[in-house]
Image 1 (cartoon, rainbow, N blue to C red):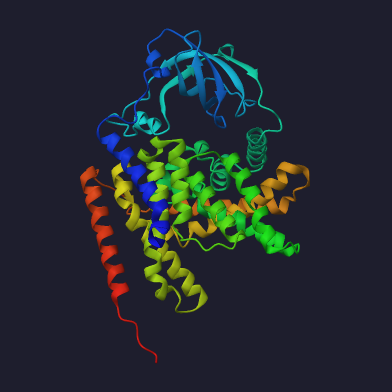
Image 2: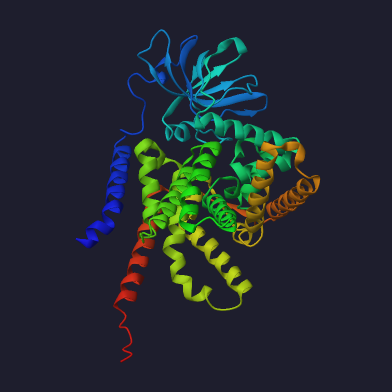
Length: 459
């Protein structure tokens, strides 16, 4: 009975995931419904009404966002649509009710010179059509979202935060800092994005567990310094996690990190000792209940795969980490973390991106620690800049500028190494499953042998 209670959540999540995979293999999932907006592709012009789902992104004088809408007057057709405005629209916020008029098209399939599968990627977000609005006359804001809503407050913070750093740092440096602190990787210049991928550090511009742990650690330190009781500090730290998650968006890595942090904080506040895999299971279940299609996306698989790899492999290196001086322990822990993540996700990297980075192992000792420093400095000073931009000392901005410049130069230097990344042939799906099946079997065998080792009798 105790075992059933302990693994009930894990079993439920695994059965649910297996059901999604079976439906996918049968060709039944994901696919648009009978009355999805994608059924109107090919019409001369489409008018629809709905609301903005996420924070609009401005790039190349265009605005892009997700919307949930219904066609007008054919209101039987509805669903999610990726909207691109061929003009900048800075005052559009999540929750705004809008009317759109434009041309529907389908996401693109990969081609010879372009291996990114738009159709597959957007299908994992239940998006099967794209709407292009060419002129401002094709957009009408029917109703603004309430000023007191969480989405609008978080969007306002995000916009002012970006404005602060973009006005004080060069374009490439501000884009890198915004990616590290608030996950705004959509504004990265293509050359910098390619350099991050080659250097194996693209994950630093994705909000993850590092961001959440730094926010919780900083919040706890400040509150404890103010003599707030520890139990109260744990509950208080839940608020910035929720606000930060709303400000940076709802991608699977963000939600996974946020839910994991929230479950850990609540368990600690209630003095409950829960298995270490429970927060990860809660996060996976929460995401898949809202968007089952996310399971089939690279973002979900890489995020949870990396975290699960650390949970599974790191305990076996515990005896190695504990020996030696503090700096030596830190180096060994960084190496083991990098090795665990590479063992766990390299087949997925090859399957999705047809390349594998060897420079990423070195990045765990160099770029990754610097990104943590930038996360703390950038978010603290940027938040100060949102509240009172004129009062931020130039010395602090200069310090951030220096740290960003060092990080950027290091990334470009590592990306220039001839052996930093290697292009490889894509793995077939059966080879990926065979690898993970064998890896799971090895771990299970090691665990059973460890349990069956007779303990010394001290009596």
